Length: 339
Image (cartoon, rainbow, N blue to C red; front, side, top):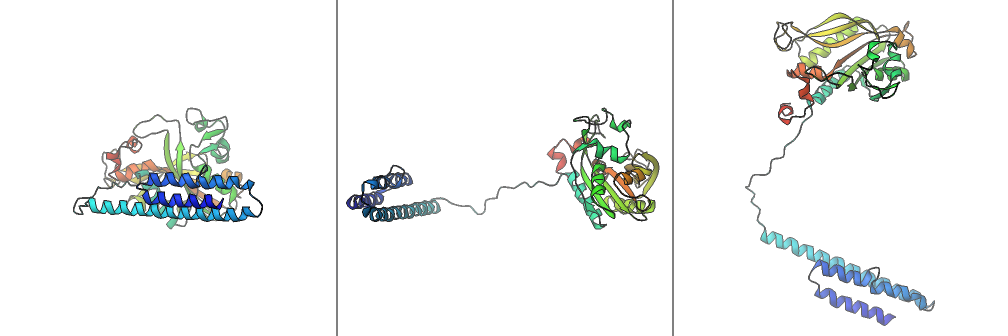
């Protein structure tokens, strides 16, 4: 058995000296240490040996196998070194040749607006919250003081998955989840996609993005709301931006208001963008309705709060002078690379 192992080693050493390619190297490795290799066959025949011979022969086989594998790896390195040297000798590199231009992308204008708004409100001490886009009517309507017969709950306005599971129509549901889990004080905004059954046109889309804000604490008033929105408008649309409140109705706020901003193009003088009105409608807001606070386990006799919400696309359109919302979703690189 020892003589057979010695012959295997001798034959391998003769073969590896003659090897010219990695393919040949691989073949002689398999021939000797593969599953059906010569050394493997020796190990399978050890059952015929005496108990005294087995450890001796086993140790000898392992030594030869380790040496074969070591020599194969050395030969591989030798081949790779020769190949690299050949490339260095034959290939020329023209360092004066212009390199290939790498085209870098950029954030989508919607994402740019979201990040900018987040920075503004983070600077005012707000948290950023998130929630599910597939929501229940409990969080999207019931807890927001929106009764079952409210028009917003109609099939023509809302995408229903089941009778009580919908694609969220607003990120207000995140506010409810926050108030249920956290006691006041609360200062948060919740950006995200929302869905409504709207026909696609220049100002409407069945999917768009909202950012809603909520503050709940003691002695919160309408003046706090107006001051917050005034600062937000100036930071996002320019220091000369003015805001105005118009009375409105939302079931989850009382009193409620629509907020307009002075036209960023004409400064309030009237132009094509603001339809000669000098103002652009931007968002809705109001003081949190006492029923909403009660629904979330917050005593309206102790705490008050305000909430606001706006479409990100509307901010982007106002900020960048975009007249058709569809441009934001068509992914035309010629349009997007402007931003």
